[in-house]
Amino acid sequence: MQLEIRGAEKLSFRERQVVTLKEMGHSTDKIAAKLKLSPNTVATLFNRAKSKGYQVVIVIPGDSLGLFGPEEEEEMNE
Image 1: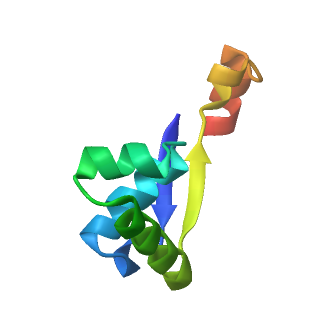
Image 2: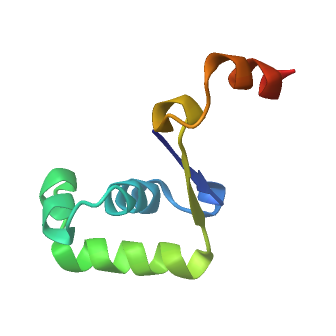
């Protein structure tokens, strides 16, 4: 699985860090501890990032979901 943040160029470095960890399911308290910030600062950074508008896309290869056999995968790549 791969996480892609579209619009990340609009975000500061810290906002990108917070967004990435938040979108991966980490709690505000865990993010604060990891980045050595207060939970209030993490919340502020996350809210600021949301207001700048970004979009998270999860890229999952089809074969990892068992949706395509080897033949179908080759046909799609042609």
